[in-house]
Amino acid sequence: MTAGAVRPAEEERDVIVRIMGEGQVKLDDSHFTELDKLDDALQAELDGGDEAGFRRTLEALLDAVHRLGTPMPDDTLEPSELILPERGATIDEVRGMLSDDGLFPAL
Image (cartoon, rainbow, N blue to C red):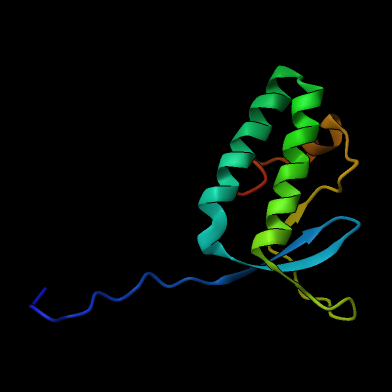
């Protein structure tokens, strides 16, 4: 790269995430690194059958999506690229939603 040249920023994109029972959130995919850490913790708690840890981490994950994202209007319905479980979901319900990459697969 020559002096003074500006390296192009990696293109970020918005992802529509549906949280079951709560609606949709527009989330910049640059936040996926942070969310992947919670997703990994959730997977470990599922694997270990840690109900209390699972509940805490699921709440933290959903709270982070709301904190980092922008709520979509209730009267708008966009195709969702990710669907997350509702807050009261059981371990078995969440296991059924997981891919090999957890709840936040590489998009």
